[in-house]
Image (cartoon, rainbow, N blue to C red):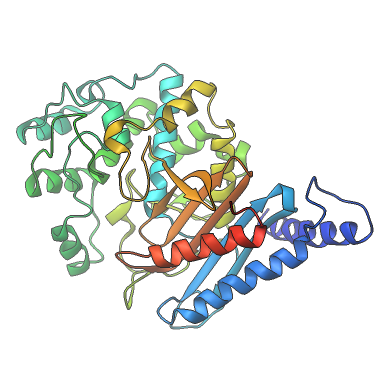
Length: 388
């Protein structure tokens, strides 16, 4: 299916250009739109960006803009620094916290199926050992709800951004972490940040607890539960999997992520695996997922998507944009867009107004990659002519 998909993307660009030149249009697009020219411009943009940033090994970009006849994946730079292999548009990568949108969508699907309520206390759905661990560290497990975990308003300390976790990971990069070890670390390293619902504190700990709840309620490993609840097959997500918990799809290679000057490919996937992160995917699969999600094709009821996109007052000023349930709002080119970013250089957003989806990945993790993120998105929307 991968080969057919690549061929299909190339055909979309070439065919729409040819038909446009012949006086007919294959897409509902502005008369001035020229998919081949736009594709060349987007390729030039990411090639220039990689060249202008010597510390950036490579970059992937997918743009889906039906009004412009575009549904294309592009690449620039290398798969890894050692071999110097060119990066391919269908190389996969670790999406890190972009996984949170999948986790949240799965929880909301369980809500639609009547297997949990968003205002249920976590003590109702977590195993007794997790409940006891949280309670022993002073957390009000009867007051913390599923909604709080989804919105990062539980007050639970985040193990993943604690410097002691970074030290532990890089001190022993092949260590296989368990979900319980990560929750226990959060309890040892931090205290409750605030009363449930009283503030915002981004917490991978809360999302690994949601991963535990998904497995407990479905009786399935998290990867299979994602596939079933979200509908991978129906949405055409055939390049997405939970790294080390599921086999990689046939023929799909995982590109090398870097942290500063270190090749992080050998770091065990378990450091970010159990709900807060863990998925590996491609730019096209992520575009398919976010388009389907924001177009109402994942949930059974429109009210579920509305609940996901509702921003509480505590989350209006959250870093990266106002935060709902596993998804953030960001203005791109003057348009309201929704998506998520991930530590290893992934950003995926869909802009409902202009019906444009943009997914990018650069395989260089830094503490702040916003200068690259903003520059690329600004240049993409300018190339499309949709900046306000």
